[in-house]
Image (cartoon, rainbow, N blue to C red; front, side, top):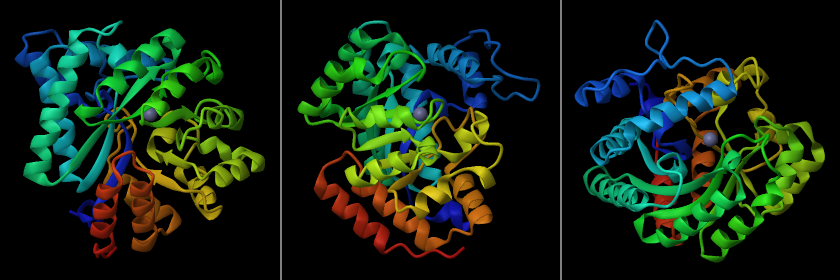
Length: 332
Ligand SMILES: [Zn+2]
């Protein structure tokens, strides 16, 4: 394994079902004697051509994990991969409205499983796994409030944050203020996907919700004003370069603004978003950033420590993890 695989990492932006590898999905179908859905291309990878198709495929995959035993297997599969990548702290997005269209016992049941498996992996492998409940933007504000209430009621199940994913083109960010105020008042960290499909203006809108982090936010690079605003408010951008390239936001990493945003001193983190859909791993992201921008240990370590300081977990854990990262020595 390269030193990129060996170094300790922090991942703040990863969607549970987006990390289900195609092989794992086929295994689950076979073990459940279910037909394999038509979501793969000839080489066995997920088949999608644009953002809408990606969302559609994602929903089909999610539907395969609606039984408790499958959901349990999925959490283990994702954490196994993160343990292999030497992730020491992760916040995983869970979208309960993808499991059922209203709060049900299934929502509760899945969170119980998530917490149980997270505890087990902490004990066995030393990884700290926490969860962010996301509302699905295109399902609208009413559903978002249901998700915010659910998130607030499940803090004891390692839920530390509330976020929003889905189609950025649907609704206005301000339509979701009530949900985000609710989550923030109940002590959850908040983050919103913005500045990905839509431009810097969507980041400006997200900032108004009082977020401390923005999912992606890369298109902030298109506006000096937005950059200044993010710096003033001290907001971290959860950047997922491989995802942005796979979705066609940028033709290559060379043209991705991550290095520019870093040079502006914006706090950033590095994540994989939906690694199995975007043909990436966290180690690959590091390796590509090293190869293209020459980033070395110092930069990666700084980004990881910064990620921890913006994590939604309790302060004592952050301190412990930052110390752990400070002791980290790795050579590229
Ligand atoms: Zn995302």
